[in-house]
Length: 221
Image (cartoon, rainbow, N blue to C red):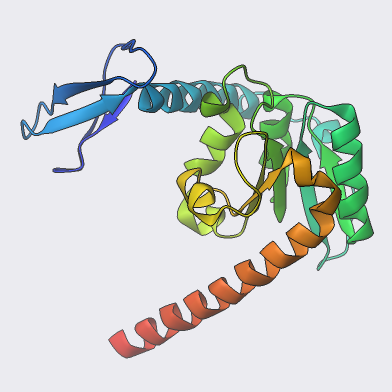
């Protein structure tokens, strides 16, 4: 399990720690001796990240197979989406909604297949159910992979979490889960409208972000 010290920013590996749900242990950073709290939730996320890393390493080590590429030819400005959803009916509904919005859509069979498809293509939209290919929604391997992408790649993705626990468009929880938008299963019938509204806010934010970044760069010159 990887531990991160917020004081000196060191990262180090530790043997697996088991904690009851809701409990927290404290460790000392071997470098600066600061106290590091480690929660059961942190352990789950770390384990999911390690599993996702192992799966990605296995995928990257596979012999190239053109059949694994999600698309043959698409327009240069085309928008693409991948769906990671275990329920066939829900998956079909989301797929149809995205296609009506002119997205090219692929569907992942499991976590390994999702990482394999993302290896060959940079998607604009990623839709995934918190229970996709996992037993614990707090240890979702696909989310763990997406959370630790380099920031320049992460900014290009619009990530939608399909959840039975969290409210639709709960911005604070979306930030907590490192996604752009949450859609509760109860509101799935409004998926298209929710996505359109979420995308408007997303593009508005990043337009301002890029303007600020550009002004900052020009000012430093």
